[in-house]
Amino acid sequence: MGKPLIFITNDDGYSARGLAALIEIGRKFGNVVVIAPEQPQSGKSHSITMYNPLYLRTIRKEEGLEVYACSGTPADCVKLAFDHLLADRLPDLTLSGINHGSNSAISVLYSGTMGAAIEASFYGRPSIGFSLTDHSADADFRAASAIAETVVAKTLASNIEMPMCLNINIPVGTPEQIRGVRVVRQNEGYWKETFVRRQDPRGNDYYWLTGDFYNAEPGATDTDEWALDNMYVSVVPIQVDMTNHRQVATLGAIFNE
Amino acid sequence: MGKPLIFITNDDGYSARGLAALIEIGRKFGNVVVIAPEQPQSGKSHSITMYNPLYLRTIRKEEGLEVYACSGTPADCVKLAFDHLLADRLPDLTLSGINHGSNSAISVLYSGTMGAAIEASFYGRPSIGFSLTDHSADADFRAASAIAETVVAKTLASNIEMPMCLNINIPVGTPEQIRGVRVVRQNEGYWKETFVRRQDPRGNDYYWLTGDFYNAEPGATDTDEWALDNMYVSVVPIQVDMTNHRQVATLGAIFNE
Image (tube, rainbow over all chains, first blue to last red; front, side, top):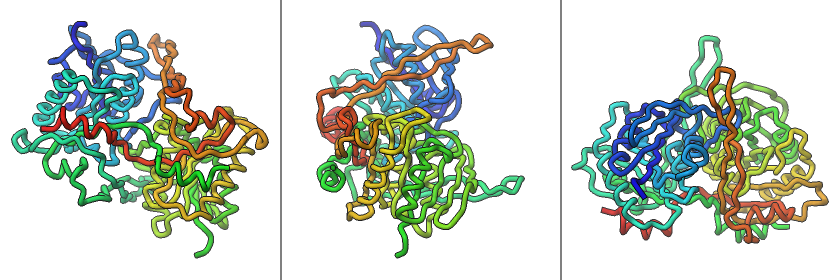
């Protein structure tokens, strides 16, 4: 058997501090291979690169650790790992992150971190996306790292039914301030944007996208938003059936012919 | 009340033939506003543009029709429509496509066409993504157009409970060859990639992503793959709760603390 093989990626790019935190944790449990984007890929969702070829650049190679940078998206990184670089020995576990910024609620859909974690789960091995609800460059990763280490240990030790893909968000705080971990569901809601309009030096208008999350169920006590608001780590198990099954029954009467 | 306001976008770009087909249909039912990407955006999923500002360029403005090109992704186009350009009068219906190529099964997750349709459904108005299972430049849109027109008429005439977002795929064939329309569920499966490795003139390896769909339930008779294989148009109602609810119960015992 040997040591577990742990694949790590992210959406903030190969030099991000959150990635370094996951590499440190991964090495405590097994051999680590990293393919992470050359460039920041926040908001890249589940995108894949169709019109350009992908480059893989070796960043670091030593006993138990290989790091590559990929010119594509987080999902591309996973595909290059599972269908090319590591196709002969699939990783036992995939970690994505630690993202700089929250990916709770509907943000799971826009998140490159979670795009990668979801993609990895298609290969029948567990995958976990980690996000710290702090966008700042000097974010404190201590609590997030301690939690990630515990989650990785539990995942490797447990016999969890596949597919398993976890969306884990960690509130900002010291390890002492965080009250615990809660497996919860995705909170309903969406992002409402305010566009900041400016003019470039040639007189053309341009817009910056800036949004606020609208919480459609502020009273819920079993969701990721509730957990984070109450200083718990949120763990949402992810699945990829987008079907609205209730509507399959009702809409047939309108559209079937 | 006046005429319905119909917003149209796509992921193949503002000059795509599939978009022209939807504009023609939209104008039969109401006033049409189009914001479509400047560049092809296939495989862009639900991505949004975080690191660059967005430009809107006027392509065409006439009675009942406005067309703009946007420098961003399909989801950006929708956000610019609903939270900026049309914020004072939200569209009554959003159409996305007609995509050149299938977006059935798990492809809904990678699709820019569906990223836009899903985003539009957050605003409480119906949205429909259309895809023709034919990537070729000279694809025949006649059957797809006839079906899209019927679906739009039914949607505007019916009192469907919101949110409503439909993922509609149309098999390749003449109108006579298409056997009907079926509201179905998303087929399980994933894309397995084969990377084509080449060398650039400077001696660096690069990779083209090319994949095949693995059908995890080839015997199913109630899915979009089944419908398309049997020359039916597939209609999958989409929802965005990614929670694996069954696992919320079981994984709490492992991860809660």
